[in-house]
Structures are given as structure tokens and as C-alpha cells.
Image (tube, rainbow, N blue to C red):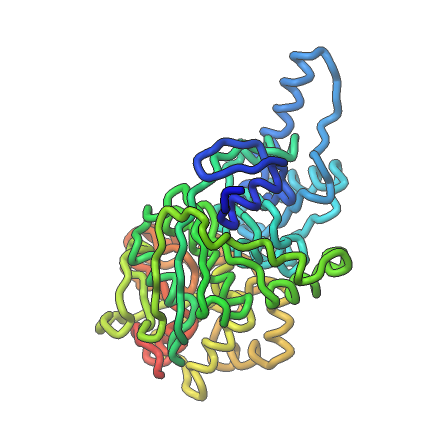
Length: 436
């Protein structure tokens, strides 16, 4: 049999036949996710599918999702509701969840979809997960082929549990070596995006492997996979290993009972699989990186960004809103106070992560230093709810996008960085590379 990439293997499993890059296939979906911003359009489309089908066939079939256990609905982007329209969307989707008897509906309290789904055990190695959000690719950190789709495609998924795909080619990123003490996985993915460009992996699967990736914990892997979309990739996938198995087993009892780690060992790209490109990366000499306005692929070494005073620092988002990220941030801050010119907004990615931070005393430390700590949500990342930047202001963010107007005024400037760089900059009041 012809050897396959990890992504080709997953599509073969979900299509019921062997498929390869460039081929078209209809695949079964293991998990479908919608949230409070994309959900209403997807649900509207879902109802229209049944209305049209009933009209054409003279029937009166009830509109039911393909599997109430596989459709996940969360509120995370505009929570609590920041406008009357947002409140109306929440009401509409709550009614939908009740009508469909959805098993997994997470209201405004649980957190960001891309953190909640993995931590609640919905994402499994070898699964095909689709979400109506571009950063769904984050789930690839657990060995899943996960990608974002538009609301029209999601409407079809809600109704049928299937979708057509063109099986993507795979670009392999081999990252080897050891990170220095001031560098983390955010610096790696920013470096990669800067190297290949914002369209360097368009409609391709980005696969990450190598000793540097193996050494990462799941949190850091999620950061890497999360930003694959910023170079156009359909997903950012990492082959599952023992860390993956342990992470998922703790969160999904059925998976743990039905699988051993040996059962996952086939979920990797074959040695002679066909990659469209292979990039070898030595992380030993990697420096802290910053994405400069207004492009995610405009990457500089943090130490080369001189005399840029910062008005606001945002630590959080689905990219870097986990316990480990806040720990890196606070370790860099140490006993120093925040600079007087900087306001710091801290938003954990989920209620679970918030509670971890609370129990560790980190929430108290943040508040004592003057940070505004918000409940788990997307917050400033999408320029909604709170934390918008004003005209000519400069924001430094651990999130994933710095497009013009993304976090407030189109005349503001947003830089992206790691939690370590954010911590150093919070102390100095200007963009500053962290100490080794």
C-alpha cells in the first residue's frame, strides 16, 4: 500500500477508503462546534436545509441535528452579552440547544471553545473535528485533523454529519533542539509564520514534529497548532504520543477504557509519505519573536524592536491563555511592579484554567500588581466586549492576530508576542525581550 501522511490516514478512516492528497472525498465528522458569533448563521442554514428538503419531497420532517452528542455549542466571543444583538443571539442559541436536546451546551461561564473542547474530552486522536471558527486547527495538537469552516458548511454538517473535502497536501516542519530559557513555543510558531508567509501553507496541512515538539507539553503544542491558520494551513497537526494519550485519557473515560497507547501508534506519517515541502528548524538559536503591525507574518526579534512604548498588554486568548502561559508571564515579571504607563488585561482561556490560577495564588498576584482580570472569554483578542485600543495606542498581545482594527481603533498598533516577552514588557513599559 502507498504510504500516507497523518492527515491522509485520518481522512481515509473517516471516508471508509484510502484517500490521498488532491483527491476529493466525503468524510464523516466526529465532532462539530459552533459558538455565539458563528452559531446563529449556521443554525439558520440548518433550518433552511430541512425546509427545502420538505418542500421538494412533500414531507414534514422535523429538523434534527445528525447527532446530539457530537454537536458542541459554546458561548465565548461576546460573553457576558455586550450588546442587545449579542443577547438576542444567546437567546436564539439557547432555544436551539434545548430544542435539539444537545448533550453538550456550554453557556457563558465555561470559556473559549478551543480550550474547552480539549479539556472536556471532546477531541480525540485520529478524529475529524470541524468548527465554525478559524482557530479550530488548535485541536491538531492532540493528533486530530481539525479545521474551521464557514457557517454554510456547518449548517450542512449539523444536518448530515458529513462534508466534502479536497484532501490537503502536507507541509512538514521538523523542529529539533532545545529552547533557551527565554524562548517558548509561541516564538517557534511566529518564526515559522515569518519564514513561510501568511499564505505559505494555503489549503495544506501543517504537520509539526521533531525533538523540540516532543519536548513540549500539551499547552505549548496547542499554541503551535492554534496559529497554523495564520499561514493559511487547514490544520496544524502533531502526531499523538504518550503525553497526548495521558492528556486525553484523563478527560475522556470511554477513550481510556477502549484504547491503549499502542492503539495510537499508527497515527503518524509514514516514513516515505509524500510531503509537499519539508522545513528543518533548529530551535537552539531561536530568539524571542514579535509580530509587528499589521501582519502576523511581519516577524522581528523582540530585541530589535526599539523604543516602542506600550499602552496595553493582553495576556490570554485560545493561543496563550492557559495556566502555563500565565506562569511564564508572572515568572518574567517576578517581584517587579508593572510599569505605570501600562494597563494589563488578563483573561484565562477557560473556567478550569481560571480555577488553577486562583488556587496557585496567581490571580491574587495579578490583581495586586494592577492587572484587570476577567472571566474566561475571547475578550480583547477579537476587539469585542472590552479592552479595545484607542487611536494611536499600542497594544502588545499574546493572542493570534494583529490585523488593523482587530483590537479596537484601525489607527492603533498591535504587536504579538509570547507570555515571556509580555511579562518583560509589562515591567519596562516598552516592548522588551525577556531575560535568559
